[in-house]
Amino acid sequence: MNNYSKSTRNTVKRSAKRGYYDKETVYQILDAGYICHVGFTIDGQPYVIPQAYGREGDTIYLHGAVGNRMLKQLEKGIPVCVTVTHTDGIVLARSAMHHSFNYRSAVLFGTAHLVPDEQKEHALFVITEQIMPGRWGEVRTPNVQELKATKVLAMEIAEASAKIRTGPPKDDEADHELPIWAGVLPLQITSGEAIPDPDLRSKLPLPNSILQVK
Amino acid sequence: MNNYSKSTRNTVKRSAKRGYYDKETVYQILDAGYICHVGFTIDGQPYVIPQAYGREGDTIYLHGAVGNRMLKQLEKGIPVCVTVTHTDGIVLARSAMHHSFNYRSAVLFGTAHLVPDEQKEHALFVITEQIMPGRWGEVRTPNVQELKATKVLAMEIAEASAKIRTGPPKDDEADHELPIWAGVLPLQITSGEAIPDPDLRSKLPLPNSILQVK
Image (cartoon, rainbow over all chains, first blue to last red; front, side, top):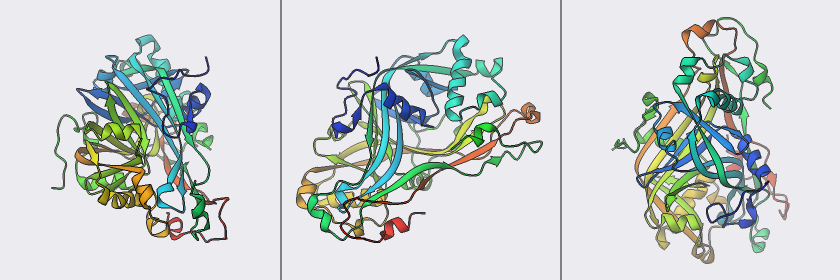
């Protein structure tokens, strides 16, 4: 099954032609992200909290300290929405109203459950590899105390959709004659020069995980 | 009043020393953003939707087509959470568990209401200036039909907090002797070369708004 089923919850209504429901598109957006925004509701109040995450198949892993307030709520199996967004460009039109962004976003719906102890380390591997591919093999892996102090949840993606805008502005035909520059200013996340920890004991070379960042 | 009041809703519990409640810090994070994530709940289901926005004082403006499903819900005055996050760096520790991100996030709580017709154009000015400072003065401003087809909501920030992590990894003292590189890989959003609209009628120079982007 390579597509998510459509319901009123995940169907893209506005600019419906920008909506995608295939897993490949959703996965690509998720795998390119650093941070997701987790939405949940307590006593009618929605919360949107930025979080590190990891994806494996249709599972999203989230982690935190055992006392983490958000995880305590999600663990109950309440409805969750997880969104990952990339801002790819500023769309500059001739008219104010047609200004927009080029973007790729994935919106996921599901519920989360506690990851059992024996699968915790694997889930943390997935999260660490999402933060920095190849890093897990370079570092000290979690010890018993650290695993005990950490809670990991898994959210199975029950429904999802992606929404993508690309390309130039869509001005009214009549506006094309106006002497106003229009086009796209591309945006991307770039990495700067790595800053060594001031506590580094010896001169160590940059790790492969950093050297491989595009 | 330069601080938001604290309640259970906006008080940062986890890593409480990273929490800020002053308006200056919250405003700086909001003003540096392109996209916010809007959280709302319908029939117990939370939704997290990426959106353009504009800030003026403690007001967040959101806009869309009059038929926009999200705006129709928010207009009812339901509780809303708006979050803006900047991912500033990957924190690479010697131990897997201490990997993290440097980030700045602002989480806002409030309710939204419809912006009356006579204030709509001003609100769209604020949103356009958030997308690209100085752009409003370069473009064709909205006409009567466009204003009619557009809905603008204003959310007053009732409560808010910011959370900021900066600096090097925080490894256990015992791990400092490990021969593992640790530090921070800074991340930032950078703009690429502007792409002119293929429909540009004449060779127009790049506008000041683009030339002024850092």
